[in-house]
Image 1 (tube, one colour):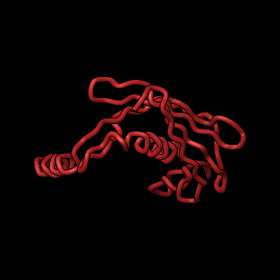
Image 2 (cartoon, rainbow, N blue to C red):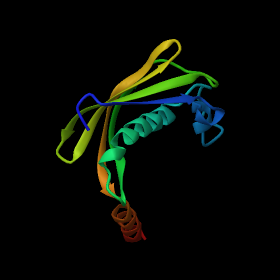
Image 3 (cartoon, rainbow, N blue to C red):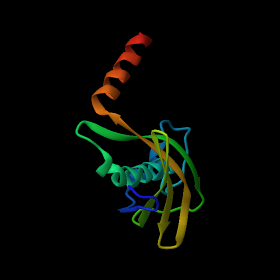
Image 4 (cartoon, rainbow, N blue to C red):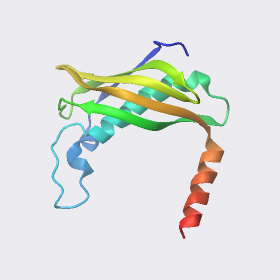
Length: 134
């Protein structure tokens, strides 16, 4: 993957993507616009797709860091374009600039870091971690 490589994801905001859907109780009140958490997930998808050619069988990429500013609301039914741009490697990590646009302009930007892991090792580690908690 070369510095400056880009991956674009285009997505239409659904009801399930709204901040109002994040609520877990009656006391939680959030607006009916694209949730920051869902938007970050879409940023991860864009960066992960860019990393696919680097993966060996049994590997996947995982998000390990985000530093995002979300400064514009996007309502349900609107299309967003998410662009991940590879900045540079940082040891075993991969650093991306990420941006989100809707038809009114830029709604978010920031940095996202990913790592390559073996799927089986990750899942075994998660199970072992939870077993220790019992």
